[in-house]
Amino acid sequence: MRPSLLPAGAWREAASSGLMGRVKTRILTKAEIERLVTMEHAVSAVEGAFRAHGAGEALMPAKVYLDLPRYRGDFRAMPTYLEGSAGVKWVNSHPENPERHGLPAVMGVFVLSDPDTAVPLAVMDFTYLTAVRTGAAGAVASKHLARDGAKSLGFVGCGVQARFLLDAHRAVLPGLDLKMADVEPERARRFAAEAGGDAVSIEEACACDIVCTATPSRGPVVERAWVRRGAHVNAMGADAPGKQELDPALLDDGVVVIDEAHQAQSSGEINVPLGQRTLDREHIRGTLGEVLVGSKPGRLSDDEITIFDSTGLAIQDLALARIVYELAREQGIGTELDLVSP
Image 1 (spheres, rainbow, N blue to C red):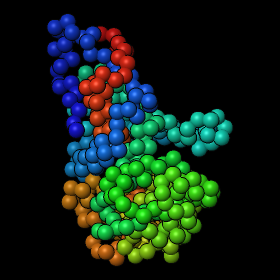
Image 2 (image 1 turned 180 degrees about the vertical axis):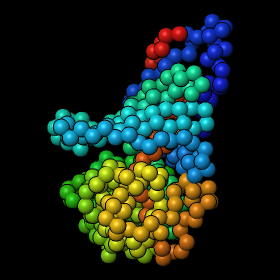
Image 3 (image 1 turned 120 degrees about the vertical axis):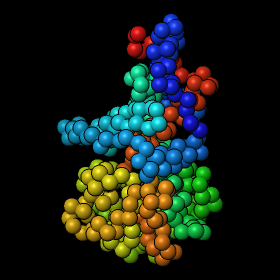
Image 4 (image 1 turned 45 degrees about the horizontal axis):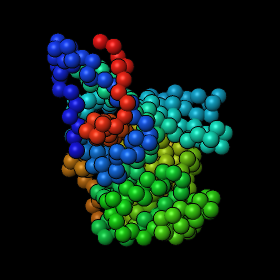
């Protein structure tokens, strides 16, 4: 689905005809968004975003970090443009929020704008949608990089993000056997009971055909010896400088597909091994977008270990925000405000 945002000049035409006040900013809450979007919407939007990125059809400046160690967290600003719409996400990472304040560790707000007039078309909660699009990104990577006939899916880290990764994989590759592992075994047991899988050791989870890591680790939690030849690994946890989940030997023994070069090198799974010079750049095959449009190869053999290094792209957020906005307009959901007076 492709949102029908205001065409170029529409705002000026509305102004000249006295209709300016009819175009307002739509405010969308988390509860309203949950009613609107499905994982199928998200997978379609994210896959399209990767293709647009691979084809060079998007503008996406580097993610800006505002590090606030005094508050044990940081903020990130993520602007982007795609096909007649623009937007920016303001998102945080405060790992201690649940324990200290009873709040989510990650919260986000997205502003969707008409690039011709700069009018804010929507302001929406993006806490839920950030988790949705991250899960969708992992599933899209598995769809295009995992070996044909993959039968098992392992999780290292069984927090909130793992649930969305599972939902997205079920939308793309249904019927996979599930193995759950966490440094806190009770989390793995709860997740396994919810999803109909098995709680296992981290080593056992890493022996699956597809492995998803979603931890806040700053040191390897997955050893090379645990991952089989032919496996595909989605490294989803590293999203800031110094974060790392995988044994550098695993990266060196496989091929890495990244989401975006600057972000991956500065804050993705490859940021530490590149800085320590334990990873040869020849193991970085290209971006997932390049794989999707065919300018770079994906998996080359059934024995190859493929690794997707996901940092989270603003273009994914924008693609999903556009769909949410269009669905909200069609269904009359949300609150319209005259946020910007003519």
